[in-house]
Length: 276
Image (cartoon, rainbow, N blue to C red):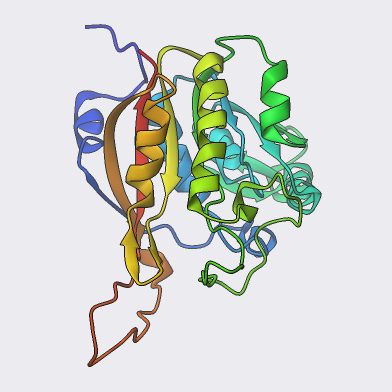
């Protein structure tokens, strides 16, 4: 039977159906540049996701590109990606990586080590508001949309506290991470979903990495809420993989020891949505 989605063999495909997704990706050679963002994903992880949902040469969209983890993963996987990022600081970091690094035998290495004949990156990043920029693309432009939207929601009267010391979001009110609360965030997700559905090729996938939260003393299943919101835009929810990277070795924090249960949320949800 023809493989209409990717270039994996049967055993590789079977492995990818496991709902538990544990990886061990240590920092790569671009990490020291990308780490300023504070919510980066290993390019190797993104390459594995891209390799399952696309074939070589196909065009991928990341509308919340950050410092370009998805774009770097596309280079490792032999694909092309277009990123959109609101914060010019993150765009500048990706452009510095694209100018100074090359893909070589499945790794990202400095261009001076790769040699003059090494292929330059094919993936590009646009600086701007994704909700505005997406409207300018023709329908069915992309073979896959793979992204990690900002979902922290800013400080405010809600009592939410950031789980990081990094300032990942811009000060721009258009930044999804600056929503006043999660209701407002889901409104933006729905608007994004409608554009994503229009731009995706038929029978192809929107894949999002979304963590759950602990909010106002209660567990907030944000991955579920995002998937349900995207279903309103026409997508079918095909599954979730629970991902965590052992190499990170995130320290457990002593939340409410001897008092009550508060989870250390060390995983993220990989939401798999399909346009049918």
